[in-house]
Length: 191
Image (tube, rainbow, N blue to C red; front, side):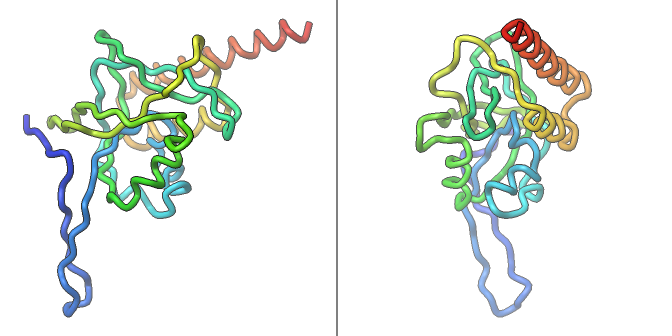
C-alpha cells in the first residue's frame, strides 16, 4: 500500500508546441454527499470535475448523518461524525488548488457551516493522507430528512462513481427512512 503526499504537482504540455510546460498545484478532496456527483460539483466550481475523479474511496472511523440544516437546500444535508466502528464511502478527487475557495464557498466555510478536516482515505488499494473533507461545525441533536432533490443528487453521485452496491442500498435506505419519519411527523402535526 503506498502513501500519497498532501499536495502534488500535476504537469501537462499545451497542445501548442511553443508554449512552456506548466505546473498546477493540486489537493485531494473526499466527497461523501452531493459533491460525489461530478455534475452537481461542476455547478458550483464552474468547470467539469469528472476529469478530477480518482475513484471510489473509504473514510474509516466515521459515519454519515444528516446533522445539518441547509437554508439553501431547505433540508437536512450530510455530515460525517467520528465513530471508531464505522466507515463512510465516497469519492476521492484530485482538484486544482485554484478551485479551493469555490469549494469552501459551496461548503459554507466562510459562514461557519462546515470546516476542513484532514483525514486518511483508502482508494484503489492506496492510502492517501491529509485529504480534505468537510465536517459540520454546529451539529444538530437530531438528523433532518433530505429533500427529494438532495436525495437524488447524493444517490446519483454514489451510483455514478461506482460506490459498492451494498453501501448504495444502505445510503438509500437511510435517506428513505429519514424522509418517511419526517412525513409521519408532518402528518401528526397537521392532525
